[in-house]
Each structure stands twice: as C-alpha cells, then as structure tokens.
Image (cartoon, rainbow, N blue to C red):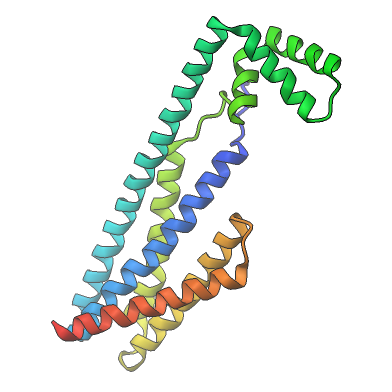
Length: 226
C-alpha cells in the first residue's frame, strides 16, 4: 500500500496563515454588519439573516481570494523551476559552482564542497539547484486548495461567534454579549498570528482588540445615521 505523503511545513504554515487571516476577517466583517443592522432595527430575524448572509459571503470571498493568491504564487514557483532547467541545460558548470559556493559559505572546505556539489548534481541536479538558489522544494509546491479550504472554514467559524452572541443573547444584553465575543475572538487571532510570525503576542492582541472595537463603533454609528 502506498504511503500517504505528509503535508510539508511550508504548506502547513500556509494553511495556518490563511486560517488566521480568514478567521480575523470573518469576525470583523460579520460584527460590522451586525452592529450596522442592530443600530437600524431591533428585529432579531433581520439581524440574524443579515449576519448569516455576510458570514457566507465573507467565507467564500476569502476562500476565493486565497485560492487566487496561492495559485499565483504556485505559478511563480513553477516559472523559476523552468528558468533553472534552462540554466542547467545551458551552463551546468556554473550551477555546480553555485552549489559548491553554497556549502563553502556554510563552512565546508573548498574540496569537500566541490565533491558534495558534484555528487548532488549527478543525483538530483534540478532539485538541488532550485533548493540552493530559491530555498524551495520542487516536490512540494504550495497547495492553493488547502489554503482556500482553510480560509473558508476559519472565516465561517470566526463570524460564527459574534453571530451566535447577537442571536442567542437576551435582547437587553445582545450588544454587550457580541462585544465580549468579538474581543475574545480577535484577541485569539492576534495571539495566533503573533505565534505564526514569531512576533510579540501582547502587541498583536492589543492591536486586534483595538481594531475590533473601532470596527464595531464605526459600523454602529453608520447604522444610526442611515
């Protein structure tokens, strides 16, 4: 039985990135619509339908955007592989020298570096050259479908929490419940984005919470105006 290929680290990180961005966008767009609508009407059915419609449109929009973006990146990866194939056909010696220089820069002696370069170029010339020049694995291109699905699910889940809070909370507590759900959700996405990017979690959380509060404030008063 054929062993299932594991998802690479790059593809896992790409899925996580798409998921965090999708969740954050889902939270902010849905809560924005909810606060705009609740400022204009107290009808719970209208509020729910408006929020649900925005949740679905946001999820599919984010998914389509991720698919297009990652597909473009994948096309770029394939293009540079094509360029490297041409280099290997026209000047293989220069590519072998590039690989040797790569190992010399890593601290390997000149003689050993050239021996390694020669061995690698005989075994897997294209894979080696692309890895050295672009730090890329030709056997594992980025997957646009995984990014699209990740973004779709996370955007829907992100928008789900403020929608449930607004729909299920008692009438007198709807806005407060939605604010709490939103603040918690954007704080979580801020924390995750910081961890993925090796950034400062506290700064990312504060930034996301401030953006979430501003989003609710702006949309609420837009609803009041119109």
